[in-house]
Amino acid sequence: MFEVIEDLRKTRLKIAERIVNNNEQIFENNLHTITEVNAGFNNDLFDIDDRYIIKVCGNGKEEKFEKENLFYIENSNSTHIPKLYKYDNTKTIVDSVYEIISKIEGKSL
Image (cartoon, rainbow, N blue to C red):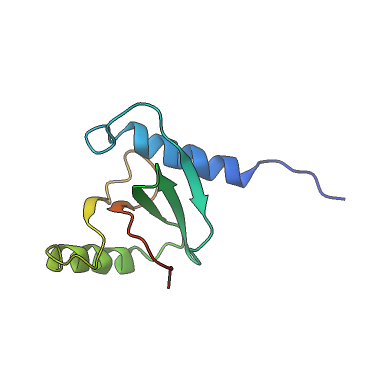
């Protein structure tokens, strides 16, 4: 018999909500629809208002996140790559590195 100690889905959604609430300059209004995206293998992904994606490093491979951040910066003029709004590796808002990018239509790789 197993005892549920913590609902990890709710915990992950609270992390996304904390990120949204601490980045008011990006997210315009106070009411947001935050849903977890089931496409990430190693990271937690959240859809915010069907306009933004929050990606939280969930596997400890922060060096890969840093490379991805540099890729977004180097390709910031491309219309085929999401716009990077924020990359935060300070771990002051949440205990993980995260990024906020624009949501683009299409199928996830």
